[in-house]
Image (tube, rainbow, N blue to C red):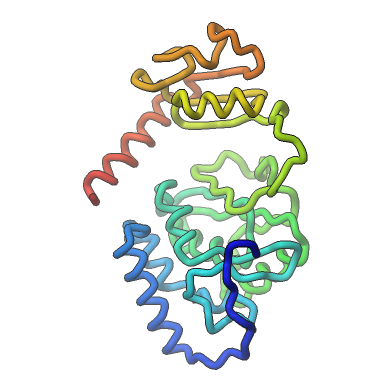
Length: 262
């Protein structure tokens, strides 16, 4: 894995008590470094034993900030800090119907299941059959038998069980073999700013859908005219105002919480 120094494989020797102490120390570290604020996510990370979702020869390194290889093609379990990085901005919470694209080892799905509780639902999609079976075995062994596991291409999510309250794409294609994104639709909560609009134009994006308008920096007609029917850019089809009230509320709630916790 490029960019990461992976420690050498070794026979696991750590005890359950040692792992529990490391888990507690890691959660404390995540809080101190502002990755973790939600009590539900904190409690989930304290409960789910990450070491049970890592291949045995890397088990003793479970709480180090390193991604470890998994069975399958280029599959990994993400660093410990990645999971609050995924779930905190989403506001993942009790009762949510949650879709994860990229099952990996199953650890993220287990953490999400603890967060949403029995009132919610976790659906996770994994394209690699070897990785899928590895994660499934981990989750069954850990007692998570009510997570919906799908072995397939998550490029379109899992429409059979939509809609979802929250979606996290934790793994994606590394390349498309073409820098032009003419067949791609981008969905965003907020009208893009000029910098994002420039990237959209240069990538030849086929369609962009946004929720709330941004009167201060929006580039689809609110402040600037880089994108949209009056912009002169006919490459990208723009649809705005989709679930505008819900998107605006989601953004306002997120930044309100950030200010309170700052």
